[in-house]
Length: 265
Image 1 (cartoon, helix red, strand yellow):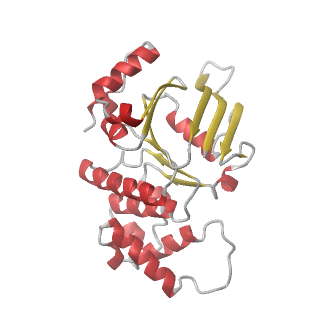
Image 2 (cartoon, helix red, strand yellow):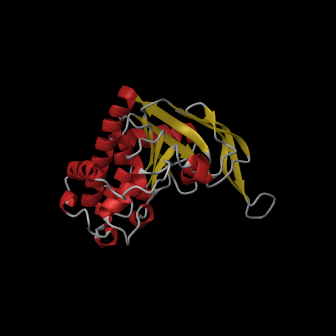
């Protein structure tokens, strides 16, 4: 479903501030895989997602989605293939619009626009059922402005919007980092449910090693723009944080330096 071929990205080339963000990065995700991504600051995690979504163009290499070479496509043209949730809960929703209006916008994404009524009765019932499954009581507040919701509620709505049209790939960029631990756990539970029920191919960046181990069926670690650890299946299920740190040290020849990732509960 996703293939990155020899991706290279350098920022400020030829200057004193030159930074190699990605170096001959290769990654392949099969249909329905849920992959968690972890790495220290500057490892290349967000750059990788920005390359996939078209925010940045790679200096070399190709991005393929479902066999289609999307490397030359701008961000807005790739949007029809992708769902994305950011760290900031306010980025995925329109604060001044109602919950049902936000969902309607997401539902119509990439579809032909017409002069029909904004939200049909059938759609409203579908949205209500989807909101009910979030178990946050939002199905009774469908006409409430999204800007009045808590950060966790907004992020849950954003997740729902990102998955509503069943994208070929769901990108989650530290989407629980701005939430308190209890709310983050709830959003992750909702994430798992949505990904599994829709069989979505998912790439989730997280700063939390425990979450990286607990969620998904595959885990990769980045270091200096390269994948240095790639585990899946039973090996991933049996991992501990200590095991992961040992794998990283052996593969990279250095000690993992992100206290935030190691100490996050």
